[in-house]
Length: 305
Ligand SMILES: NC(=O)c1ccc[n+]([C@@H]2O[C@H](COP(=O)([O-])OP(=O)(O)OC[C@H]3O[C@@H](n4cnc5c(N)ncnc54)[C@H](OP(=O)(O)O)[C@@H]3O)[C@@H](O)[C@H]2O)c1
Image (cartoon, rainbow, N blue to C red; front, side, top):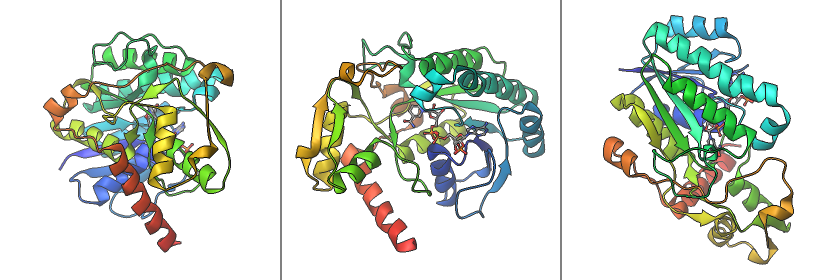
């Protein structure tokens, strides 16, 4: 059985990879994140506290477990925070990737690195894996720089690009666009939503499966892994309202310009998924299937509380 080591296992994708292994995906899993493990249950895999900003710590953990693959999900993912805290963003999103690439090379592990649609400027979406990057934000710049680090590494590597990931994690504090919209509309709060940015939202379980397929098949190169339905952010939120039968009149459509955000976002991204379907057998759930899965998980979470 292959051994995989996941960084950022307390995060959305990290928790879904752990869940997939506990549900029967055949891997030895070493889950690592900064600080304590916040995922439950804590059996069926190993957990190690590992700070990706500490090369000696990373090296010691990789040396101990000798994984076949490292799935690198940890990052500073908040686009505005990256804009404001550039040193931290570069350290986490670029320097730590160099550390991992060096250590994967030393111990013969494949590096499976997570990247983003924000490496593109959004002028020509949907993109295939050969699309020409041109990031608009500092977050996108750091993620593109990290892609270059990975591509220049001497270890086996794969880069997984993805788009707006939605799903439920174990702690209620973590949100994403689907949960944010659902919770606000349930409380009867009006929400402002942009109608001039288009994306292909990704079910976190689909992304986890895409990463595991790459590890299983030792696939190399760049892979697009996302949902397969293009929609504007306002359409996405309207679908959320429709699914849970919430009041759509609370949704106020606005333009991106009116938000005046410091970090610019691409207009239309989206991915062509043919390579992942052909090479990996990847299949994205429909958006409403993803919402139905979330709904059942929310019911389960309430029952467990
Ligand atoms: N979510 C999206 O919409 C999206 C879209 C495109 C691409 N991506 C990419 O997909 C990947 C996974 O995203 P995600 O949504 O799962 O991210 P996430 O939920 O923010 O998880 C990232 C995890 O990294 C951990 N981390 C932060 N600093 C660390 C450090 N120094 N050492 C070890 N771990 C550290 C965080 O720990 P704490 O929880 O303790 O802070 C967090 O659990 C990222 O590379 C991201 O760039 C995500």
